[in-house]
Image (tube, rainbow, N blue to C red; front, side, top):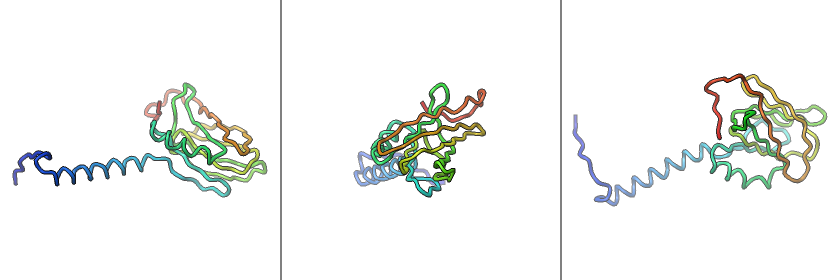
Length: 156
């Protein structure tokens, strides 16, 4: 077994630079995995979801002007939820969106009109009707309390 001696990055600027670049790449990759993402099977909607953490919500908020519907998923007590199944149906009953929100916020750009939103979370279901136009409409969807299920990921 070869023994390695400890060394200071200060004494070797090249190693310090390489270490800083590697750390920067790792942090960038981690942030990219948590950033808002486009998602879903959509026939007539553009969708972006996320909002896990303050930076992610700030990044997503920059795209609000491109959307006309913002869904916010919470527990009854107000804690944010993620991994919520979302289906959106137009007034004729045609599904225009089928996705999973990977964070508590979901932004969508829909044609102006009236829609039925069906959100599901571990067997719980919540439905709401909403009309959207040109401006942003925010809808809070509070998923039913599931009787103290442990291990449910929530975000404050």
